[in-house]
Length: 422
Image (cartoon, rainbow, N blue to C red; front, side, top):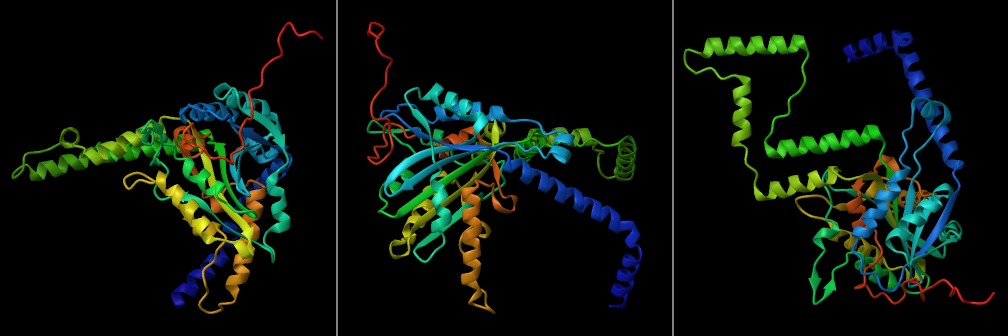
């Protein structure tokens, strides 16, 4: 114990050495955070409702192309932009809302990208109708939480490293009795069965990955592939380190030459490559990771909320949505799970049990705030999904999905005939 206090005293005695750098680093972090918050406040957001045509025969591949176009908003944030102007990378919020049994599709976008969003959707779904609407989530502030209404919800995270992909629509691209499988149907069936005063909202926030992190996660994916393939990644060494490494190898082989034939690093490397063999499972994983890191990607946050009157609140609807996300999970690759720290529930404290109610109340307030303002995930738990994965979990339902309460285009619109008198 005396040693600890002696070290602490020495540490505090040199406060002039470590305290200034600490305070400078803290100031820079708070300054950048302040600038970002001010920059986000200046963004003018609009909410667009997308009414899809009654007959869609396109697969989620069409939505993958839309995501490719939306990735065009990616910008590089330079040094002055970050530390002086507080520039931030804009993002989109793609939403599915089940309100009193009716199903809606929304996209929240910065106003300057409205034309881009409309052009990308019409390029793949020319008959879709897109219109600006009032934000449906605004009423949440008045209702939740209250004595009349209650809310349950969670933010999702990945079960494994973000380099591993979730199950994509290519695995669902099958036909059974001339009916194509569509993973989005599970969510729509749940929403279309809601009773009055019951609501389910699912929110997908997507933000283009900055160049620095984009290189980092793709390099990590390549590293995982090399590890599974049995390949040794060459690490660049300095001249001095390489010299001592070679000298050490020479001395070891010199003393061991009496009993063992010398083996050099290059020979060992070649042997490891030739002896490496992939199992069928590892081969599938390697191909899946390679496919993920080869496509455009977004930083993603997924959250859903179930809101209903307390007398009709049904927790089974929460379990149903959680179960619907399980269809994208695979044992060998990746999957979704709830982030317990970013939901609306709290654990029961052993010492002071009554605190649980208060903790849940505060969590619900924070959750509603993140949903209404479309904030990225709590504690920086957002993750990377490529455009193929995003097109799987969010796309407009194909012909097989026959949800009667879905908002669709009622009739085709056409230009008036040329011969029409004016």
